[in-house]
Length: 427
Ligand code: PMP
Image (cartoon, rainbow, N blue to C red; front, side, top):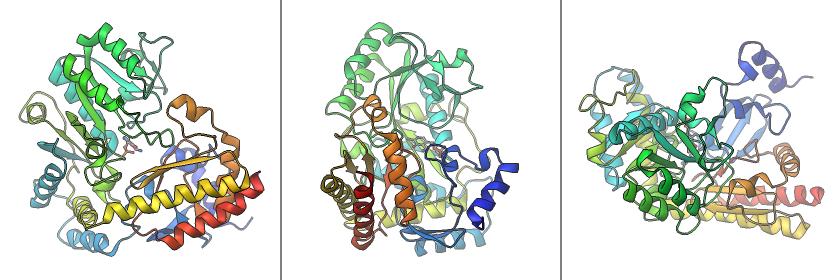
């Protein structure tokens, strides 16, 4: 064994649980040795053995302009030269807040944090503080970071309490989280009818990207909006993944829905740690120091991270950015689907803006149950064969994929060509 990836993985496992600082990186779902990445540029990443891959993970979403975009790297360098962190307000975070409020009409005020988890955790606390209610609704298969209230799976019946889906989450917390089926509006309607005056918030990924890619059915998001308005609950769109990824105004712009609160991350940090939550002024004014709901952060609004985020957002404002991005993702989804069809492999693919899903199932899934019914074993073989051929897809059948502005037609076509050979072998 003279693979540096393997040697690093062995070494890492002695001092880091599972050898990784975030579980999906460990390749547990697909098996094998994670690639330790040494550098990345444009659409490509290089591993510790010097092998190059066309990358469809994109740091799990942030790398929308391609890795190490010169404008972002330069913005980080310039900011770093002026000092890394002050724990005091800066002009650049005001610029960032103004830009987010300008780009997302639903956001009157916004607060910056350092991760998506912090954004959703804070938004939930704010919704509870605003409404004076404890219960929240989330949907199975949606991931909103790892705050206690959000690591909850469905109870045994519709109107029962949720159960912790992680060790260390008290059942007393989980019982306030009601877990429903994504895309099932009737279920949400029934729960609001029964318990509407207890529900502080509905949190939803407006396009689900953490159970592979699952689009909202026509009327689902509109229905959630209507129910929240009717029962006085706060509608939270978790756009940590979809924000500035599926279009210039995120999923809320794409589907023309106005949430009460929005959570952001990934793209707005351009590869640096930035998250945000924002929305209606009357709700946001409940946050400390204006209001009674506490939230804070030593590194919140980090000048270096904000510089990267602003540079990233500026690049996405260029004319035609999202049209080109969506065209690339569609070219990939269509190309993979056609290649699988030629080979007679049961497969489908879908894309929204710069996000895509690949599914080893005959149709595109519309629910968590559909996703779970796909052929995982075949996905794992596809994943490893593609990796071997130099195409890095997410190491799990339950994650969405991402393209960037640096993925040209040449990269997409090379990936489709590799997949054609892999599908033929999978048949
Ligand atoms: N919400 C969504 C929709 C996400 O996709 C993620 C991360 N994948 C999070 C929240 C949590 O973000 P972070 O990993 O930055 O804490």
